[in-house]
Image 1 (spheres, rainbow, N blue to C red):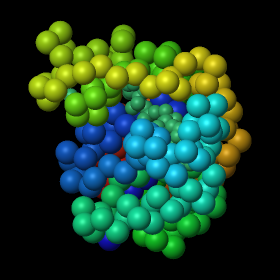
Image 2 (cartoon, rainbow, N blue to C red; image 1 turned 45 degrees about the vertical axis):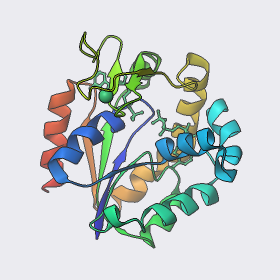
Image 3 (cartoon, rainbow, N blue to C red; image 1 turned 30 degrees about the vertical axis):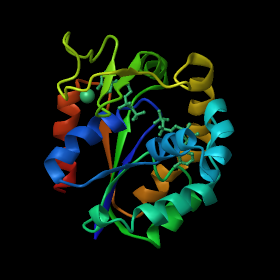
Length: 209
Ligand code: ADP
Ligand code: ADP
Ligand code: ZN
């Protein structure tokens, strides 16, 4: 089994690209952010620990995240590998991952900080299917999402104050991972400040390298 990692700051487009890459590769998306939000909603022990960190835009402790991933990777749909979105976010998480599954490609979606706030503050998704939209850059069709279950959902942490903490956490704790993966020869950077389809094309090229 071999997996890929979508890497980048909050709002870089990891979830947006995961939807598209999933269609091309068949690898299921594993988003620790989505898993944590589900845990908070369900009121599990993990959710109760994670809630405060998420609301303030800080990273949830490594041990919590690593336990979630260890369980997730045992599910049948992960047998041929997965596409990680938003994980790993620290070097200890990456070290733990290396002991769980082999990673063949780390795709870094690069977007300058000044673009991030507008991306995050305009973000919404379909509660029915999880598709990601944007007020200006990628609005849902006038009749709603084509999944037929259209219901608009916005995240509580997608506001300007929390975005700044999340960007701070990214630069301090997550961006050092880029060099860590570069030294392993599996790191591919793509310019994420372009049209969604162009970025998907570049990612598919990188996955074939
Ligand atoms: P991430 O998963 O990295 O946090 P998302 O995929 O949720 O990022 O994207 C953040 C926001 O930016 C969403 O509203 C999405 O529609 C929008 N977006 C994604 N990719 C692009 C792009 N290439 N150009 C403009 N907006 C984008
Ligand atoms: P985004 O890509 O927009 O930053 P995510 O959905 O990936 O959003 O993450 C939302 C929040 O969940 C983060 O701000 C953080 O608190 C927590 N989180 C998600 N993934 C991780 C992780 N791998 N390690 C630590 N915290 C995480
Ligand atoms: Zn939908």
